[in-house]
Image (cartoon, rainbow, N blue to C red; front, side, top):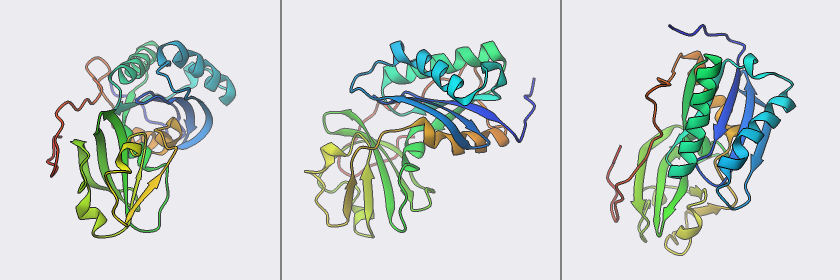
Length: 232
């Protein structure tokens, strides 16, 4: 049965793709309450439900007031994504409300603002491997998500064109490899449920929902080195 869409919507956003366990309540695309824990460990299994309780209390609402649940779909930590998606599915079933999935790299890209150039958010995978995507200054998608091994000429097409802002928990490992003068590294950025708010509301208004029973996180398993090729 289709869900009835309301322009005035409360959405619970869940982000567990990295070590940042983040939960927010958004109203009409604006974050009204936010709780996060980033202690350097993957403590999502122990902390996520407590953070959900805290953020609902801070927003001054009850769970039954929610119109939808949004969850970060990946790429990212296998375990972290499973925990977030499982929690989101459980709430959707219990409350009979729709499930929205949000591209983790897209929401991370919204965490910085630039006037001109490219945004390249990176999520750490292992060794010199990262998950990456390329956006312009308006956070419009320029290139799809890749799983790639960082080498000295990674992102050279973009670096030779204009300034490139590289950030996320996968950026640190790139600093010694990527030394182009147009590379600008921004530290301390993790995916957050705060940036999910705009995306989840837009998808809500478009009735862009997932099948709760069959939805699975977005995993990338094939890594490539040198010149990238699209894997999704």
